Amino acid sequence: MVYCISYDMKNPNRNFEELHESIKSFGPWWHQTGSVWLVASSKTSVELRDYLKQYIDKGDLLFVIAVKPQWAAVGFTQEEYNWIKGLPDNYWE
Image (cartoon, rainbow, N blue to C red):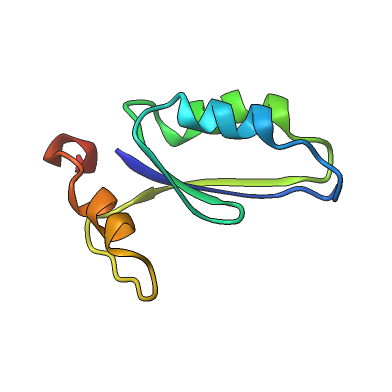
């Protein structure tokens, strides 16, 4: 399944390295914009959320949602479009 992971960390001096490395560990990923990632994983949204909770503080926001193959975008590079277009069909199930 392809998921969109979005977060809002309240501490402006936050070190995001551990969170980012954890997101990358789930499977093929695209760091779409500042705090938005797309990741292909066999885990559920609940499993992803529960694992990532260890990297956020009280008051921070974390949102994980499944992405359907019907999508639209504008302004990204061809490489970025190719990432999502090139995912195997089994990630969209």
